[in-house]
Length: 226
Ligand SMILES: [Zn+2]
Ligand SMILES: [Zn+2]
Image (cartoon, rainbow, N blue to C red):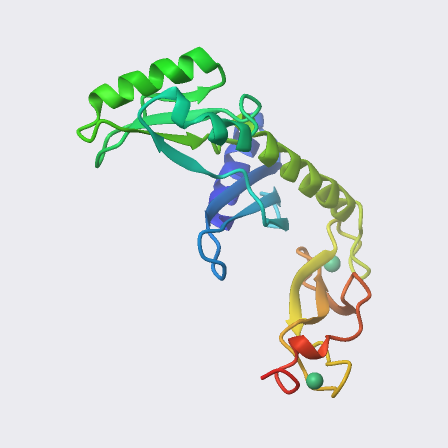
């Protein structure tokens, strides 16, 4: 994701003849820990081509609008369309069958969905169509909302100068596990502190976790609840 965002930011800087570029990149897929649950990641990257200074902010989307259904007619997809908040989220319609390209993308009109399903069923060796939420940001209202939240955080970060060199964009680079258990004091896998970092001079500072939580519960402790 970082490489893709960097390439976009470079292309933006080139296109405008400016020393800096800003880009967003998203990735959606299965949740690493919870079966059948999707998860999304959205990233914003600001880059100064002259100095190599980069500012990156990322957000996890625990409930993305990322879904699909197979159907042979419009009546099979009504519940799906409600679930993804169609037509604010558009759909992609493809015939079911290996290696067949989508027939229609960015569809936001009900009669056009019905027509695309009919065509897809005709072209499918299995007589079925697959209807997916369109994950392109401009076609997915939920994604737009997540990117908007990320943008607010990003703007706040851009406005935060490094305490050492005063470059913009001082903020969280990574977190450290080890939040102590409130009962026995053992270190848990939960975040204990965050490392704030400057992308220009690489100055770093450790800080307590931003939500102020000081202890883990015994249920989250490897000693109390092995
Ligand atoms: Zn404990
Ligand atoms: Zn700095």
